[in-house]
Image 1 (cartoon, one colour):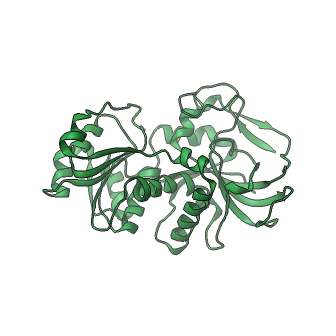
Image 2 (tube, rainbow, N blue to C red):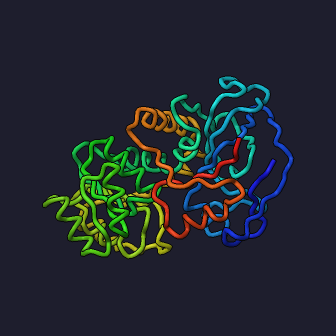
Length: 326
């Protein structure tokens, strides 16, 4: 089988394509013929050894995939050869075949394309974990989404709409704002067009924002935190800007608000049953059309470096997915 391999840490152009032996399913494991692999911003970090998860070299990037069951290990029940499935594995998915514990797999509904299914778990899973479990978002509350046109940002906009929130989508260009508005945001803000804090406060009203969803970090973070109201929740999702902000903790005290970390990967690895529940919810939303599972660009497996370059350059609206032709 062909695989994208990181043999030395570096930028995407350091990745190589190798022919590797096909995997074999052990007890409790499943081999999947991979059709599509979802890529994420953290893939650009993990290959540079800048991510909190640090796999031993060599390894393949890619944390999420979709395909068909090729082989079942001893003791595996609940899956059949040829069944359409998707799964999450932190890293290692960017190859034509993967072997994973059956517990990390979930069925893909017949009405959902495998390419879309491959891009659902991390971005929409992160947003669902953030808004439902960590942010406790309620219908009618105000939600500001930073980086609203990227993968996790778009997912938060769409799931925020499912939850019944009022959503302000914030992004770095008029085109990106328009994209988020087309996917369900109630209002938009282009960072270059004014004062973020003032805009957030005007959108929220006198009580202040209920929830800020921030996958960007950087200089906008404190402004967004200052727009929260009492009992507001600031959700720390990531740092796509490349800058980890240092938030003044006195604001949490003075405003009686919270800053909450959102570590989807740790939660998913700790509790496979929770992950399967989340994926089932997301598949239902996607099949029903409540979320778009928008894929901006696809690349063949062999062009993984170019695909990661698009993500690193912040030129993506929604998801980038690799395809194997299988």
